[in-house]
Length: 418
Image (cartoon, rainbow, N blue to C red; front, side, top):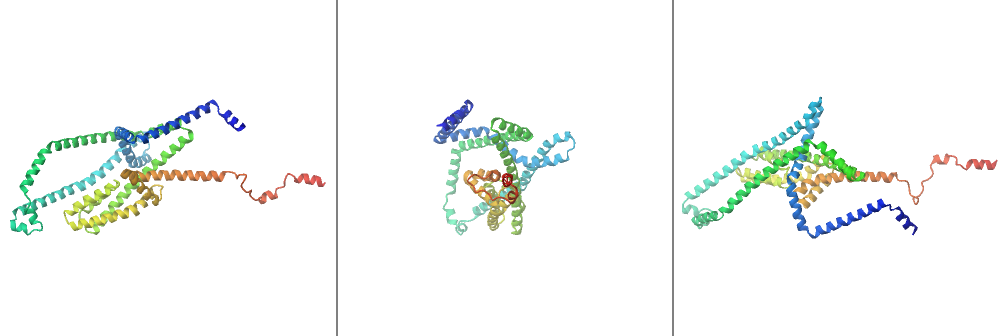
């Protein structure tokens, strides 16, 4: 009873208000979670609507993170050579322009290598189909019957097939026009959204120091001191992890493109420079990028030799396996603070949870968590080592220094002997 009275007496009005607020917030959060679980469809629709509103901002934030990697490197190099304050103010705009030109130059270089060759491949295929149709139309009935599928071709009513195709095009003309207008409208909306995101990214990059200080002030003002400092440190670790991940992903794409180029030259496959550059640039796209590079490269080589196209597909599959299981973990472990085993686990788990987006974000998120857990573990161990031994713990043996030190009772003993 006395202990209960002591606890009740310790609850000052301020503590009672804090406790009541904590209980109300906890009950409200639990109720909201329960309602959200009971209405998952409505919650998902609402989240989709909200994401549609802020999608340009999210895209701009992602573009800012990507552009900040070369921009930060160029900015640091320029600041080392800037002597006067007037030049320092120009370092950030110059770094942004140079980084944007670098990325656009890489994209333009790959497009200039791929698009002309791709157009030529389509022209070769179209010419081959035209020649084949002309050859078949000029053949007699006896010559057509000697072909492997000659009897099947002779049994097809080509006039009726052409008439049915014309009727289908007439019936579906309205829907085709509507689809075309919808595609054009979506393309215009996509271009507008891209430029809005680019403008937002520019604002973020040019005022990143101000945004950083304002975010820190908000956290310190509205959260407990320990939680605010931990969140600021966690955001700093995540920033470093994402920056190192983007640089490591770019390095891995360059390595993959160079290996593909060298392998195609050794195997004497055509279009080696173009396909190597395409495979390297599409490697930046998780999951889908490998299929895009393989499909376009195989299509290009197919116009020259079907056998070489098959050899290319087998070679690229083997190269992707070697790169995904050996090269990628090694490159990323040197960039992010995460061992190769956990990098592979993060890629597998991330792709299983959120597909391509989870595969892209799995490694930097896992790296951030790994660093924070390692720091917390080290701090916990140091605190335990610094704690004094408990009463139930066995007392350590007396040291020689304490044995040599005269005790306080020795003078009394001498006086008694006297």
